[in-house]
Image (cartoon, rainbow, N blue to C red; front, side, top):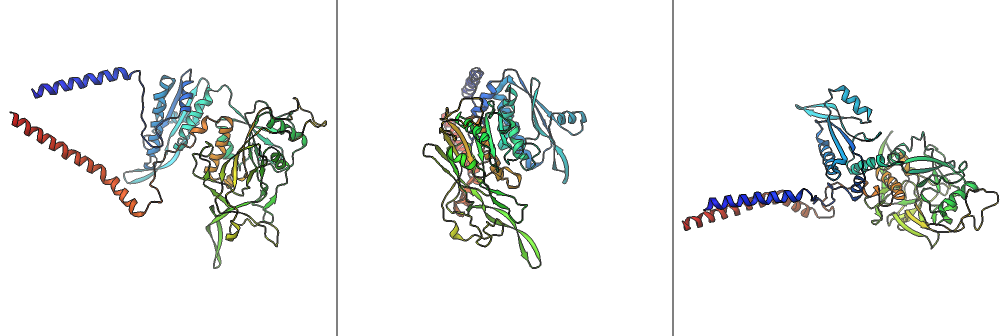
Length: 528
């Protein structure tokens, strides 16, 4: 009797599994129970995958033997590729290519696609060997190609993969303008900004815009970037910029009212007298003339005398604020934990009619750098000391979104001396949108802080497409951490609970099951 019940239960179970599988063929459901959805792809990615018409071939060049510290990276890449395949179906054709290091022809193929191996230490038989490892991804579509040379940044993996596919599907990449001709950094041959420009070029076409030679800001530009302008603009240049703003242009504006030249030993800091600051004040944002100090700051190296020798030491540098007051509602910064600017100016709205949304604010202990009364210059040396009474100004905005629908800088009519290929706009035809930062030094490698580069790239993404790729950049894939504010005793308790709770539950489950089986046998014996 009991054996017959077991067989009946087994047949019912098999039947249920069969029925579930029949219905599951057309029903696709995936669950990601991690707090930050680290194994899920975003709606933006799903939308991009749904727009693939002809199959995209994905080649993954990977090494079987990976260093221990990178095994989790490799596994995450493979997991994410499987997630893409689950949603894209036949639209993505995968080819996993194992790189053993012995097939020269295969290595040449990978290199021809732009896949770059990296050197890593591999432990074998208690020996450490230096070995080249591969983890590159190539996307092929029609006659176009996009490559991730080595997928090490797992926090940016979905952004890079989706951006590559989106770029392949686009008939023409979005065009981003880079203002030049007024003391701004050059777009080409610029080693200081090579990293920033390289990252932008991954998804956009960067073009120089010289308003002295252009008859207007090109109509096919999606965004115009204005970085570190130092010289005065002519009336003709200002007019073209003015009309671009009034026609609803989108701008990224990164300016300092001080110019910094660390190679100039006598005058490393000078005032920036460009008329562009008055121009943007008319269009809704005032960039302050004072350099900000902040007790919450990054460290830099300073030389300290130790007898007859000097040694480098790390010191707090109030001229490099560590900004942790970020706008939690705006996607430009809501995934960042901190941003850093060297030599920053504050921002304020210059008109009550503009919509001014602060993105980044300094700490409560913020102040203004004061010039030395003897030299009348601000000392920016790392060894300079700043008394506490200077930090009395409270939080200051150093980056903001400015949306304006104002009037022309030139009034009701165009100056007779200027020519322009369109009618004069006195009032804005459409609202303009700008992201303004009171710093331009962060775009240069010398003053680059990784999170601030992300802020710069997020700005470009958001200005181009408010709800696009920016929503998946710098995905937080780190596991949740214990609150650092907890007491040491509480942390220890949580630690031991984490270690012991699962084994205790398993043991208790076993004991309960054993008791149930023991009782069942006793009852069965009694019935017999």
